Length: 540
Image 1 (spheres, rainbow, N blue to C red):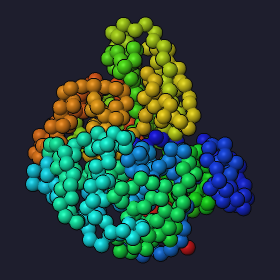
Image 2 (cartoon, rainbow, N blue to C red):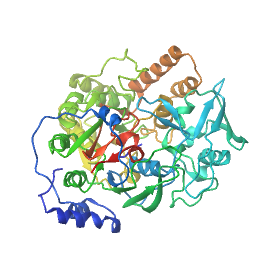
Image 3 (cartoon, one colour):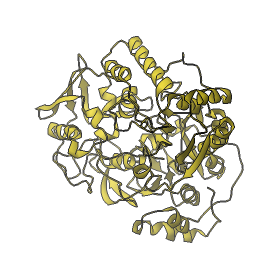
Image 4 (tube, helix red, strand yellow):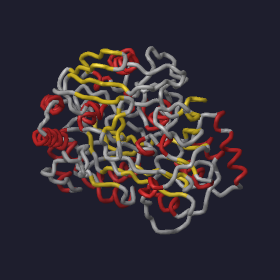
């Protein structure tokens, strides 16, 4: 899950920008600090907005060597190299530098074998995981089945405080049945297991790992430096198990929370790859002549959360009134500049094979909003909408709702809070506020982590027994037609009753220097499914 976007400052000499970037290792990067360091800018240029087709990159011959400097939009003292603690895109990027998973999700969200040579099951309950031979950790230790047992089992321990504990509850037993084979038995059948094992939480650690500051894994880079809230540096793993990879000698990943600072640093040449561009930045970046934009269509969304344990927002008619206030077309056109897709208050995008086409698209309808507000019995309800800049569309969406709400008898106010500490101090802690959810490879993961009654990130605190039963039943259903019907029923329950409101699915927009090659869109997440460091290379 990511906790996600200003205008640039005046241009400054390139030497000033060089000094700025060299000092990043010594500070925690805030907006003020970055603006002082990264004031190097480029004049706004005009040009046709066209996202590049990167298919040609696969045909190019990779260049070996070089140091790539990249920036994630997330950065804080809570940055971690522990996959169980990761909960944002910055964590995922740095962890994919140092660790590998049993499987990996490709550009079509199909799980491919990683550290596992094979993962098989006849009934969806008992799974045999045979490991790839000859894989070594950064300290020289060989990968064995016990490393996998440790890595998977630790998510079940409440003391680990794993973000994947709800998923790990499916593991009935995990045991080594040989030096290079693991038997994983589930509580019930789940044919999505290979996809689940390809997600960041289940990256493989060395047995008994307690110190996560070293990042000792089997991944493409060896950890040279990890400074939470500032930067992470990795050197090429010469013994990486994938022949010919990685291409780069070194990667430096910075945490830059200020959107303008990331763009300025990219355009000045100080950074090669940056995450989470605003749609307003696209024309500027593509028009620079030196940089391009990578658009990744996915199931990522920003959502308005109406807590079901608060007096006003738990009123089902008030929730419906807010759903009919959503200015979806205006948000798509004016806020994300067309880089998104209209959503329908449930988290399944229209291109998904299990999408429920029978649900009528909910329009913005002030008359219906008035009707449901009157039906709620609430008289001119007064509420704050808590929002922050780094959640795409949150501030603009809240301001639209403030204006529209005044037309139907609501008194809505926008409370703009800093991004620093938003996820620990504000997210899910107010009657009404915004969240941001990165795409998940399976609907089971999405519903289990965000909508099931016991989900760790059940944003609105919604509880529905029928929904919970459908989630668990769908996992073990092999018949795809029946499974589609189950997921369709789940979407209908969320659409009609849940306290989260989803107006749009938002394309991930990342910026990169044209010196970076091998760039490709992955629906599993920004920055090439967070795995760009392993796959790209630099030209002179």
